[in-house]
Length: 302
Ligand SMILES: NC(=O)c1ccc[n+]([C@@H]2O[C@H](COP(=O)([O-])OP(=O)(O)OC[C@H]3O[C@@H](n4cnc5c(N)ncnc54)[C@H](O)[C@@H]3O)[C@@H](O)[C@H]2O)c1
Image (tube, rainbow, N blue to C red; front, top):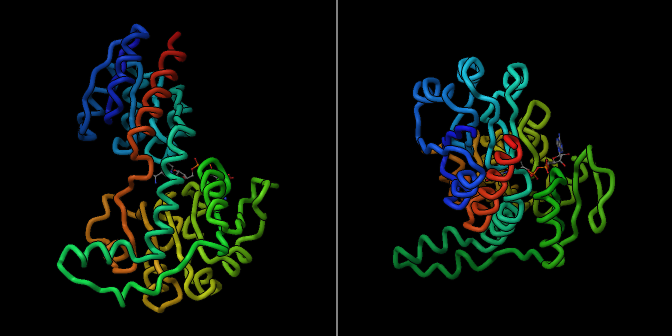
C-alpha cells in the first residue's frame, strides 16, 4: 500500500479509484512551500496539477524519505524540477492527452472571440451600452489561413476543428515532418502568410519569445494571435505594442509570463480576450485527467 498526497485538487472519482487500488489518500491542497517540504517525505507519491511547485529542496528532503513518484495531472512539467527528480530516482509522470480537446476548443473560442469583439461587446452590454457600430467590423475564420506553432496533440485537435471552419492550415514544428491536411512551413513563412496564429508549444530556452517584435513586423496587418500554450513563448510587451500599432487585430491569451497575472497590461488591454489559464478547465477534461492520474498511480505501485 502506498501513501498518496494530493497537493492540488483532482476529481473525486480519481481519489476513489486510488483508494480502490489499495492506497491511502491524504488531501492537503494549498500548502505553502514550507508545509510541502515538511509533509512530502512521509508519502510515496505526490499528485500535483499546476499550482504546486516541486523544486529541488523538496525533492532532496522527500527522496531521503519515502517519495518514489510524482504524478502531474496535466501536460506541462515546468512546475517540477525534472533533472533533480531523475537524479534522485523519483519518477515523474503526467497525463498528456487527457486535456487536449479542452485546450483546443479554448483556442478556437479565443479565435472567434477576438474576431467578433465578444469580450468588449459583452462588457459594454452589461453597462447598458449598445455599441453596434464599434463592434460591427469583425473578421471571419472562413477561408482564412491558420498558422499553428507546434504540431503536437493539442495543435492537431485545433487543426481538425479549423477544417470545419474552412481554414487553410499551416504549421511550424521542426520535430514533425508531415501532416495530412496541413502544410509544413518555416516560422517566417508562417508569420508572413497567416491570418490567425495559435501557439501550442512548450516553454523552454528554444521557444522563449518565439514571437517577438521581428516576428510581429513580418505578419500581415490585422493578424489574430492566440496563446493557450505557455507564458514566455510570446513577448507580452511586444504583442501589446503590435496591437496598439494596429498590426495585430486582437489577441486571445490564456497563459502569462507571470501567473497569477494580476495587473498585467496585456490582459487588461481592450483588444485582448484574457482568460486565467483555464485551457484544461472543462469538467470532462478534469474527469479524464483524474482517471489517468489514478491509473498511473495504481500501475506504478502494482
Ligand atoms: N492553457 C492550458 O491550460 C494548457 C493545458 C494543457 C497544455 N497546455 C500547453 O500546451 C502546449 C502543447 O501541449 P501538447 O499536449 O500539444 O504538447 P505536445 O508535446 O503534444 O506538442 C508540442 C509540440 O511542440 C513542438 N515543439 C517543440 N519545440 C518546438 C519549437 N522550438 N518550435 C516549434 N515547435 C516545437 C513539438 O515537436 C510538439 O509537436 C504545452 O506547452 C502545454 O503545457 C496548456
